[in-house]
Image (cartoon, rainbow, N blue to C red; front, side, top):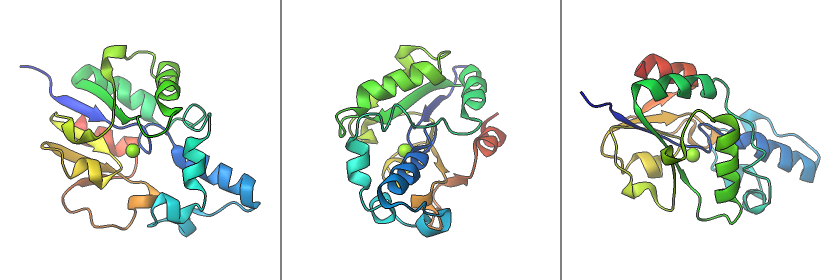
Length: 173
Ligand SMILES: [Mg+2]
């Protein structure tokens, strides 16, 4: 039997971009926001200059890796036909930075498993893990919503919500 195809997002799933938002916002305004202040708000409402940060060189390259994601992807990579799918057309530095980032943290994956795209509506597979409704809502297979502040508290009946990579493994291994 062929393996099921698993589609894994980067930002907000493998790459902890919120740590970058918190850090850059604090550097600019002198106060570190709390999680409670940003939960339930979209990024640009939570962080005044969010758009400037994602256009900044190093934003994607220097994002910390999400807790437990490396070990989890290693396990899932054995069981599934796994692809990392990331939108990387909008912000000029994001494509090369994301490729370098993946090579650093996920060296056990091959370049054939990296898919950088514009819209994810073209993506096909059996299971998708993503933090954005705009990607999951179009996906024809099973959909797992990775909790991030911007989707926190929003209705998620259509998708299976998880709060950590440990929970992803409980569902998929
Ligand atoms: Mg994402």
